[in-house]
Length: 263
Image (cartoon, rainbow, N blue to C red; front, side, top):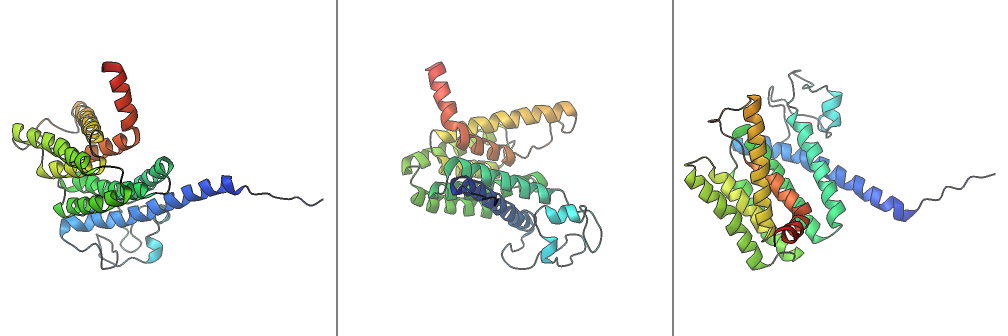
């Protein structure tokens, strides 16, 4: 008796799309690694082949397969055998997970495209800040220009809401920077304003609150563990990114809960 295999296209399509967006995230993460390494060094991120930072040898395509190449090479350069930073597979994996999560939440739409672009900028900014304690202006400007264009296509945040989001997020961190006498960097202020542009009010306020909470908790943990001292700088871009993405995914529920609880 012949066995018939029936594939339900309605079941297959979501799984296939999820896999495709995860793969797209991995590939985007591979490009973001180039941005993270080259942008702070003033190198072009558009032209030129990828190379080993240690021996400067150009890498073949099979050395650049996201995550798999790192595992196959056991975290070492094929040519000089020096260690490859674990940042490379981490960036790829984080971007893949974020892309997949955003697809689940927004489906195929201009809104999805808008927030995929935002997430890519935030991932790059976070890892640059972690390594170099800076957020390049060119990255923030690119993110802001993309946000303006994609907001016109997505039509999910109005002009005044976006303007209010910029003012709320950047204005508050600017006040913190002034009061703390440099404790908050100008790059953080600009990055927060960019996030406010994408989210608009009131989600920008939620994002700012979550950024301060996650950053504060991380700072306490680092101090208690002895990994940071009170006077040591704390890269804040990862917490701006975390707050922005959490507000994007759960901000409306948080606002609804707050209004029911306290209003």
